[in-house]
Length: 120
Image (cartoon, rainbow, N blue to C red; front, side, top):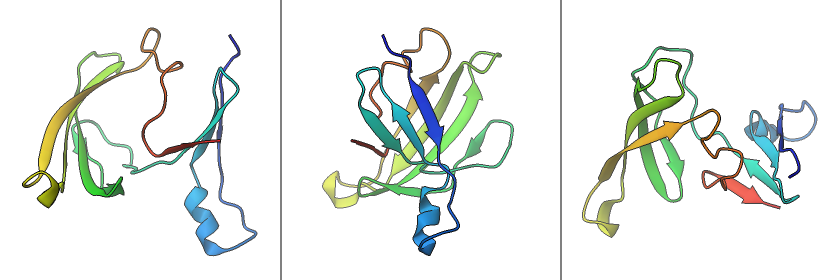
């Protein structure tokens, strides 16, 4: 299996102002040779959990995502909440919870990115 590589983009001083929107996006090379362009949807400054990311637009909704507590002290697992403005499509807002896992065995290297990625 080929090793996966990630490249974090930096805003370039040449070109139009909107080129800065690519700052901190990543290009990921997948094991099968395909590439993903991954955008950061929201950023929160350094802070201990719990906290909420600033609201962001994604796939036609405005999302509110928070990090609750890290379930495992070494910060390999976390739990949080989300809600969006699904509105008329689903008779009001939708909300829920999520868990996240990092580190060996998480499948992070093998999973397909769903969040703001475009395959090339």
